[in-house]
Image 1 (cartoon, one colour):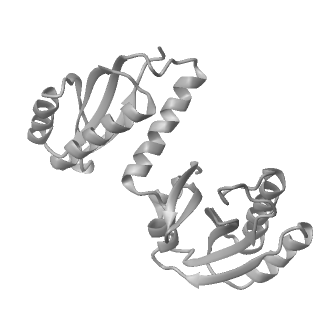
Image 2 (tube, rainbow, N blue to C red; image 1 turned 90 degrees about the vertical axis):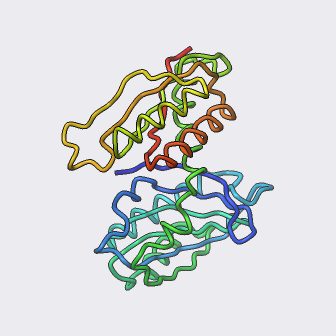
Image 3 (spheres, rainbow, N blue to C red; image 1 turned 180 degrees about the vertical axis):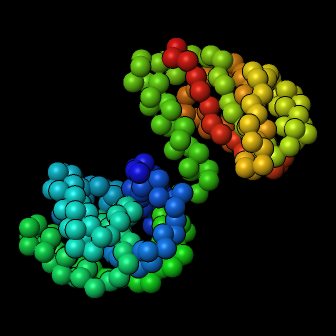
Length: 248
């Protein structure tokens, strides 16, 4: 399963761009792959930010070749890359480290414009993925918002126009759900309907609801509103589960 996305962050005091397969989070750490592999290279012609190659075609071919070669030679899983100061680092997980240097040299021969360095380290808890590369909760929420906004814009939505927007949340008890509902009513939200999981014993947060309010969905507005709802849901030991909007 794949869910690739990109975000900008501060990494040890440097501006960095992270491209990551978010879908791996649900299964991390993988028991059979506990070795972190790193292959790095200098970009040939980085832009002024140091985060992108001016011509990404060759860099993309290198990335694809690395992924295919390490998967074929080592059954390695590609998790993503970090780019900063003109340096691009590709990260993988594998069951062992033997063969990573040979695989890097094989790829380098096919892309002589790039000089590759390769290394490995034990990473039983997948710290490189979970602690270093995976986005912080506020960044992840904003990334999800951007995906919904992009889908709306693809259908011609004018994001500056207000409309009724549905928001979803789930809780561990009917009482917590009721308290959340009462609190958000103070901020102009009304309930659309309640959502109840059929088997409450197998679901940690079986008591859900959909609430709605009239508002715009530009990036700044939606980030503020979803941050507010997420914080409030957490106050009642619940989970905010995102939003939906009609195309306007």
